[in-house]
Image (tube, rainbow, N blue to C red; front, side, top):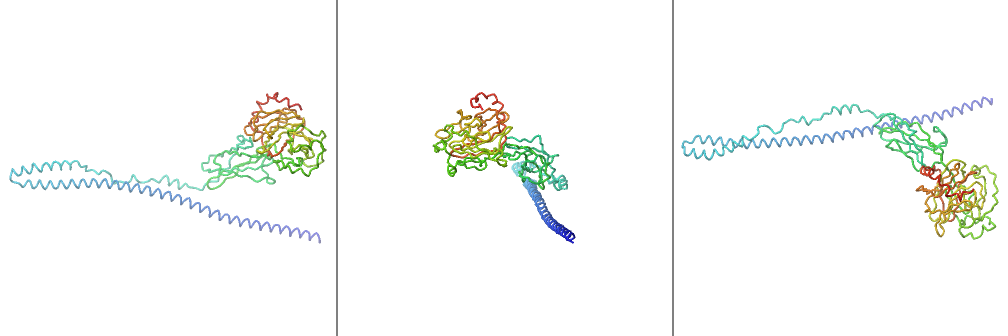
Length: 506
């Protein structure tokens, strides 16, 4: 009995679900019918607008041509009326002379006839000469046939009017696509010439999966509309995923075609955030921004020793006074904690924060921008698990450049407690290039890509980005590829290692 009841419940549940599906499908059908009606009405309205526009053009052309015919009519009539006036005047004068001549024939007195002839024949000669100069051919013809229009070609064109076809899907030229300097240039072509294409639509989506786009667990498509060319460059991207899917569709005036087959381009770059769990309590950290906060460390336990003295002075300018005792490790399963190996917060005068992702191989690049009022800061790398009192550049396991805006502005390279003053202006943004396998750490003016300094060392442990700051704030830009300009400079820089050998004794 229980089994039958359970079976019946399953049947009821299935029927309820099926009923829900049918109801949803009916709703969808009704919605689709309504959309078809609305879209049909819109299409008819657009068709009416197109034909109204065509009628308007024809009506305007008719008015212009009719005006030309009327002007031609007026010109011809005026020319013929001028001829008619001239002929009427000549005929009138000729009739008067004929009457005079008849009267002269009736005179019997020879002397009187001679006097009349001397006077009148002069008038006759003038009048006759004028009459004979008249052209007795119309100046213009009465034909207007050359003003007619042959619409045969236009009629054939109008009879060939058809609905616009759906554009074919474009084909992305993967070989012509370029990923460089955090920009993606994508190029495509139509499978066949189509002069009715009005524009293209590009969609792109970030992903961590190689190959075709997946239905679930993906970010939404971003859209770039009204592209007139068959190439487009997406610029200013942050590569926070390994790949990007891209697809293109062609649109004419009426409809959009199918999307092209999507392509997946690799956009791998070095991405990290600042590890707030290990930062000094006097630093306020949020994702990729760190700011000096003099009130943040009030609650921390006072540290005994010389590190506590003269806390009002610039700690990054003082001599290296650090503990040689390594910090105890914490046991944790956090991915970020494992990246840095587990450590205590920085303390004392080591106002430091590290990145949460280690460099273990390959070539990587990131940039740093300091606030204008920043008094003192360092940018560099360090091995995992530095001492909590260690400062960047003052150990044999850290390398950095240090900018001091306290009293005067200086720029120096530091490693193993040795410093080298760099005779170059401090840039607004600093680019950091790390070639782990090649044993090279270079610093650049991020705007001009001018080289500031290069360290060369055989890195034996993973490197963490490191930042020290006092009075001010730093913004770190990550998810960046190695710029092409930096790659080019590496070729010429590789022969200049001797100039920095004094700082590279690791």
